[in-house]
Length: 283
Image (cartoon, rainbow, N blue to C red; front, side, top):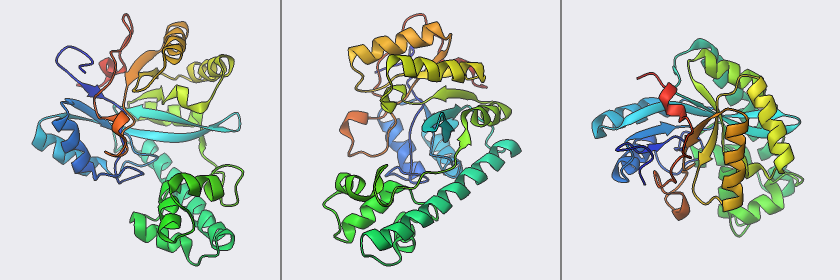
């Protein structure tokens, strides 16, 4: 569905550079096949996929928007902040990315150590790194390793038994603060957007408290056009972007072709009267 006139924006997607199933080039090609004309690659705490995606976008004639999805700690909880329209060579941004990646490596090593003990395995970190082709594999990769090792039935079972909060191999990560992420995004000329605000299980009061802090720290936008929102969720997001005077963003949060409900570019229209965040990007 077209988001704005003849252009189709999808400003939230993931590749193999983090926890997506497709290479950056394959992701761009799939987006082009689905009619997306402007795609943001927003891998978790990394910019590594952007060069490959940029080349593929040039070949397919679509616009690639530099992006990232920062993991942040706020009020002792993890939230995700999108950085969109970034200068990916900005030194301050790159320094933050390196710090976040080191935190991911440290977390992965500790998850592996705990799985060795809890699941009766050996070298879980090293084997998961091989599987993911990364030194900082996320929990979905550990879930795949556990499934291959015959310790769980599937990914959900892996999380419920070992990997989710409260279980034996869950490891909290010292992410940057929300304020730091916003500052670094702005230093790189980007827009800071709260990702999938409906996905944190917040009450209306708690969401408004989050957005109060986000706005006070200079945050720019709110992701409001996503697949699968209920009418109640959409009404709450509409209330929030208006009350806090936030720009709006649209994104599928695409990870894998297996997630049929998260097709690239198949997004609802942005709300009437809202200012889309992409109007602020450098042309």
